[in-house]
Image: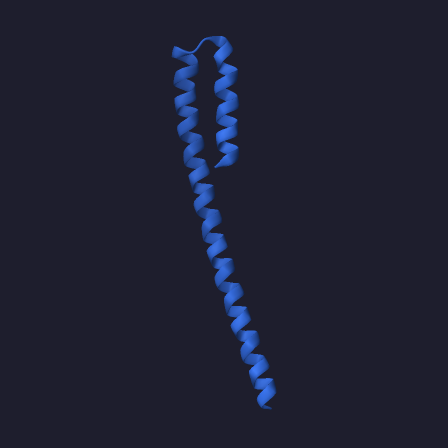
Length: 74
C-alpha cells in the first residue's frame, strides 16, 4: 500500500509540473501572439506612410521584405 501511495504522489507531482509548464507556455504564446499583432499593426502603419510619401518605388520592395522578416522573427 505504501508503494502505491508513493507512486500515486509522484504521478500527481508530475501531473502538476506538466500542468504548470503548459500554463506558462500558453501564456507565452498569447504574449507572443499579441506582440506580433501589435508589431504588425505598427509596421503596416509606418510602412504605409513611408511607401506612399517618402520612398522611391524601388524601395517599396525593401520595406515589404523587411516588414515580412521582422514579423517572422517576432
